[in-house]
Image (cartoon, rainbow, N blue to C red; front, side):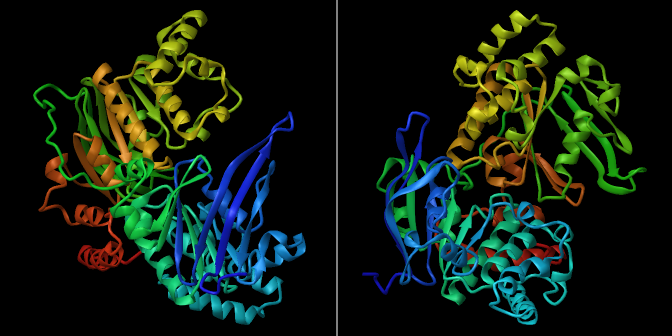
Length: 555
């Protein structure tokens, strides 16, 4: 019998895969939880823990090669797993809706927003087009989107990332679902945008009395929206309880490790010990750059920045502030409109095609998405060996031996040299991404958001690895990120960027210790705290700071 106090009841759920020999292996093992109307349960754990598999199982769906081998999913009076496919297709999109991690990938760029938001209720006959458009505008207002009467007439590329993520929520809520599944909905967003989106989700769920499953790897985020937390590891339930109990009195060691790795500001920011008496390794002088045939769309204005040997300089700011553009300029991937860049006192040619091989060797780039940056059809031995042969003149045999040493240096087994990138986890691929940058033996590595897509525990391991490599090799880092909590742990100096300019820069302890620049205050205010009442206070304070900065809310 279903319990009337709960809208969703998941009992002893198992999901299995079958190998080529016919042997079954459980990837989700004996999971049970309940969700009441208007409440949120968070599924938390690192990649591969089964979070998304469980949430999809609640829709009666599994990925290819998987199947639900035991258990039940009760949504109100409906036994979801007992329904035939036609009935499940009616449930999905109407009774159960799903908000994916990447809204940009989920929207059709060739269709206007209104057409996509209203598509499901119109196709299913639940509403007329006129009724669906009116409901969509009500949701736009509820989600505090700008210009709710006209925003739906735009195309997806004409709104910001935060707005698009909230529009994804409008699409999920327009049919009045009883269960909403949020799969890492803020991972790709800036910290300042993230809190507005979280606030909108939280309020919408309460007002509509919807049950929700929130999938994430960051405990500091779920502390703001979840009523209960289910901690997962290797497909098994590690800990389950009210949010306040999990974050204040965790019982399991793995839960404690997640809390320790959460994106929180450190209690104390240490003073860096970097000498500025010697000439800098890198000097950027009054650089201005833009996009377009004549760089008429200015992206950077009057940038001045230096990096010492063995120093980590964090470059922080929201999306569109110019962080990655600056990294591309320094590496030669694009040319400045004006200004100079010096390396070891020698002026660098503007574009990579005009730089010497030695200049190219000294500055290497570690890209954000390792799974995109690494060729999936090449073994690691070739991926890592090529820069060794190109920049250092090693033979094939010597490069193969050096690849083994390099893998050991980034804490990977030497036999990984004969694997392909898709055979590695996300954290392992990011280590290979770093290893490829190190293969040339550079003086400076530009790290572009290299931890933003990783689980908190894996991200902390990458930060520890960067520090170890710096201690051993004396390499310098330019660490690009929007996460001020992360950069506070690794950087010696920080440059804060906004609208293509550096608004403030200096030693990390000075920049992040009050009194701060107004924009730095906004970034600091956006870092979640491990308490359940933080979000409401943070949104109010954020809006005051945005008003002081003279900005319209473009989140």
